[in-house]
Length: 186
Image 1 (spheres, rainbow, N blue to C red):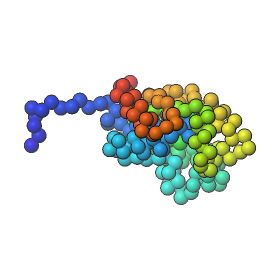
Image 2: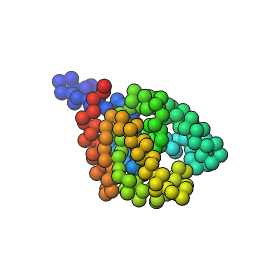
Image 3: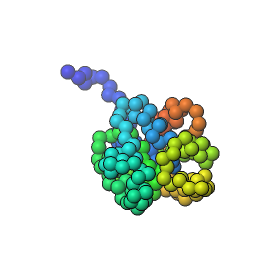
Image 4: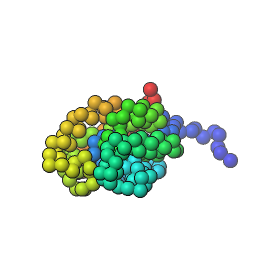
């Protein structure tokens, strides 16, 4: 039987919502997201992984066989489905938050956190993996710079902004947790 005389701890506004990490490729959304979910005792979903499961193809295969527009349509459907699940931590693809409908849905159903990093940090990180279809080109670093600049206006609409620096991922997780303490629904 619960003790009604014990003071209940006030719940924080974010506790009933998914925490969606947005930002450019290489910002650390997946890596940090896993650790954040563990810290909060929540499930973790990576939208790119969920898209691959739904399509039965890798992201690179989807891009090469069907093109970016088809990938974005599938991404939108997967994100819509994920945002209906109980509160969890969600790492989104770099372009997901650019779509106005997806952005509005994420603002309604989640606390959005922009993981921001400088170009050199992003470049260093994205070179570690060879599965980025938008960077399979000769001018990859210049294109990454262009994408970051072009998408910044969208990312900046996220509820919270956290800088993703090199160093232990626990530092970025701690920064997100601190920022979440300040979040209030609009």
